[in-house]
Length: 331
Image (cartoon, rainbow, N blue to C red):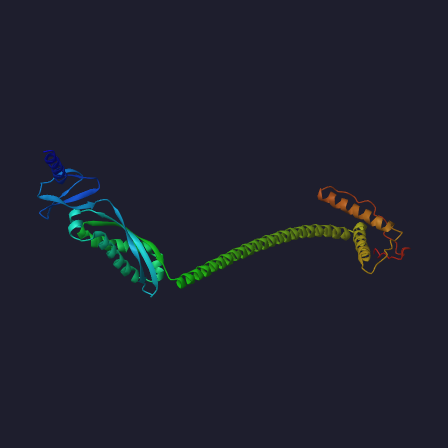
């Protein structure tokens, strides 16, 4: 009797587990009635018809990551590269994923491999190495369209590794080194060019400023010479007027001027090692006094006052001075 009760308890437990189903979060169960799909159980507790319904497939509804095996692909320019990747998928329709494809993960993996070979094979090696984003986008579009009837959504596809042959890798390394050296040479040349331009501009500005300085100096010198010429012309005119009036001081002015100039030339002569100064300088002093009287007369005439010049000193003697020099005649 006891064993019969035990059998009933075991049978009741088995019956309970076969009828009551608890679906965890992130999963969905398909229900089959006599082998035919009838419905899908959502997360939670559900009760099945005993001996009639049973759970068919337990589907994972969370996003899954599938590995795409490494394979060798020949590019458009006949270069062999090794490519592998990963694909992120999510089951959206449990019934379609369970009954429209036999092995979902294997089917998606093979689909990714074939399309990866197609996409990479239609591109050249440089494009494959530099346009991974374009490859991922094209693969995602193709895989998503192919897995839609299976109730699966392809969220992302990434190229995990892409390895060209060793000889191509070495050639690429040499190419990169040459390119960097070329950039360094170009950068250095640009720097030298900019430096030369800067130096040329500096020299140009310096030349312009120097020319402007010379022009300003020449203008100032010309202005000074003009003023000096005007003063000399006025002095000459006044002396000429004095000579015309018979003023002896004017004659003494010219004589003394020539005397001083001749003596200065004698002192500046490169062959002259000894300068002999005449001992009788009275005539020269008298000439200078006469010049002073003449200048005073000119000043008084400009101020509009009548001034009578004093007696001029006697002209220098015609006799030669004891020092060996000669004084030009006053007449």
